[in-house]
Image (cartoon, rainbow, N blue to C red):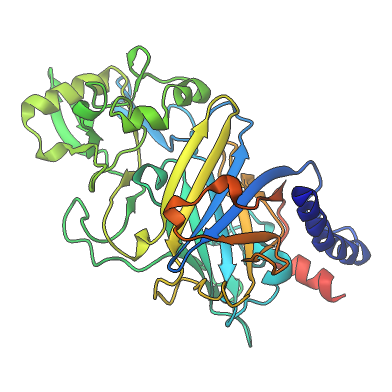
Length: 425
């Protein structure tokens, strides 16, 4: 009955918006037409900490643990993409109750999707423009965004801590920003600074058996990867393969056991990577031999350090029998950061609005699923997501925490300008 009630709550949110759009004319569907994908959401909090748990079933047949791979092409003498591989991701935006963003309570993250964004018709010929909040009189300064990535943060035990800031329309905005660094990068291994290098260089020059081979900057430590510097599968060194076959050769458990790594981690307790330029020529020769055999390596490199970007801890589990992800994001109720929304108002009965999105189709950009906004509050607040008050979040019994089912829809290129114009007609 609880789930049925929550689905009814979602329908009540949808109907007024649909009516406004139908009255406005043949605009793109909002929410998009087509079947809904259910996302199970739970929340628990104690005196100092809040946790949000998300569960969903993938329809790909494998978990998205790998992201943006490169394989050495001996004929070309260069590193090529063997197949397009995108990680699974779950994220949500939440507004500051005391500095609300116009339209967010009714439309969620659609308020950050504008006509000039990448992939939108109005972006043709423009720069690289990503989600942002539209500036205006009485407009909120930002939205807090929690972003878990299956290949680029999950392996470290974090979710990416970001925020979406305000910009003017058609300003080529890079609206989504990572939270402040722990400090400027001070070494090549980035013991401080960005938590991620998206594009590790493939530029370590080495001559192997009279052949000039460029090696990646980072490879796996073979002691933590079944004796290999590159991805491994059932037959040892992994070669170019279909995405599903390659993805199914890896698991969270295998990485934890130090058998098959799926993400390069350069620093921190879970470090599993070697810095190639710092190695002996003898070891570089072994790396070159594997590269020439067609070795595959992730392009991103992860850096684990204490800092604002790592405020959100994350736990992940994948049930192969049901093909179901369970991801839990955990953070202090109040981090003290100006770019993080405080949840200390839960006990006082304050209700927060969340806009959620899911990438789970080996795609990026507009390939994600989106939801209408959902309310979050304590038990008895009438919120769609009821946050359970527990003595210790770390010991929470999630079987006793209320579950809300949020419907996700395939995203369509509908801008906030279209939605806002329809809503005001």
